[in-house]
View: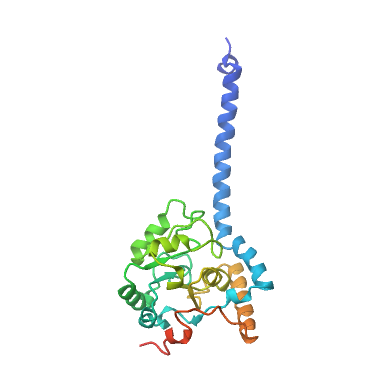
Length: 253
């Protein structure tokens, strides 16, 4: 009596081999996707490529119009008076601590004031939640939207790459009437300046939870920005707010 293996036809063996290879490929691809996502949160290749140009010829793109400790020091009323129509926030270390999906609680009153003035024209534009590569099913984006009460803009390219088209469609106005708020000069600020936003740089909310490599890159970015500032390199002038100090509170209420 022949075994079941001996009775199999040649083409059946080929189909079995293909099935095994396909299953193995799926597992390998899934494994690689997880590794890539973990590394991607720490190493922004798009940011690195843009940084080369900034170091040599476009230093002004990394210079924010405004620097504040956190969003509580932003005068939302003044920005509204000057004609700005909406606000775009980075997420990690700008309005949430790293990897959290909830608003950092001390910022609640400032965020509520921002909502009261700009209505639905507030959004998160993040290199984590809402980014196709690392949030393909939009799960993180939906959690952030429910927790903070503002929309998350889904996008394909990591800051500082990409245009402002997706954001302009969401807000129904040109990016020159929008404010970009973030904690990283070479990602959030470069993206905002490249696309005509008013750019506001905040200090990070918490360094204790950041990976070592992110801390080192952040330190280098800030060292360069401070050096360039001391050499007299200025940010791009913004037509709606020539004197950007007008939108900064001297102290918290």
